[in-house]
Image 1 (tube, rainbow, N blue to C red):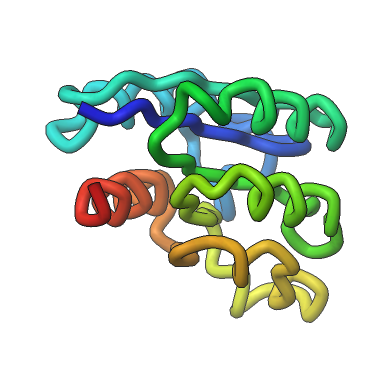
Image 2 (cartoon, one colour; image 1 turned 180 degrees about the vertical axis):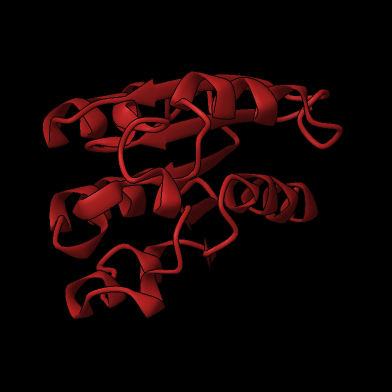
Length: 143
């Protein structure tokens, strides 16, 4: 059994409303509940955080570093420029998978750059909500 920290960044609180053709129809709460109750998630403990504020996300990463054995992070737009999030991930030494609902390589040029991917064990994108499930499977393989 692993303790999995799931971090969701800016604008992900609007899932289900914001551009459903890109991000899907599930709300963030529905997506997190689906992940937690999936066959791959049932044997784990989860803590979920979402904030539109970079510092709040960094505090959550720092605060849960003793509890978490693995982390799934969808930092949203912060993935593309937040060296502070990158440093937070790097400093805690917990296996982390970066996930994105949409295929960031098929979108605007700025979305193709991730400053956090090099401090994550893997990057998963373009699978919709299954990106989170794939991230969990990767953490299961590491454990």
